[in-house]
Image (cartoon, rainbow, N blue to C red; front, side, top):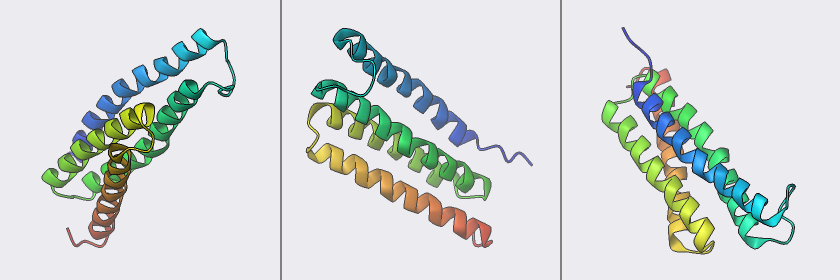
Length: 132
């Protein structure tokens, strides 16, 4: 039986591709401002750093949780839905943090990410207990 987490691998590929322009955005701003460490007093650089940083703080854990849920036998529709919502949530959060840090899309992106983490965690626990 193939237990490779194929859905998670696909979502991981999307996230890896998404992270490249985020990283470039920080690097380009550093090159433009000459600020090579921290953010100086540049608010735009700070937002770029935090937007990318928040992405790399949450995405790896969510992907591990996705893989775990997939491996323990969570329904394909559930894992795929979580992956899709997670991509949307992280993109919303990133864009909102860059443009308007106190906006509703940022809050929604955060809440959706946390809900996905809870759903995936519950799926893993149910799977380990043999209930799914």
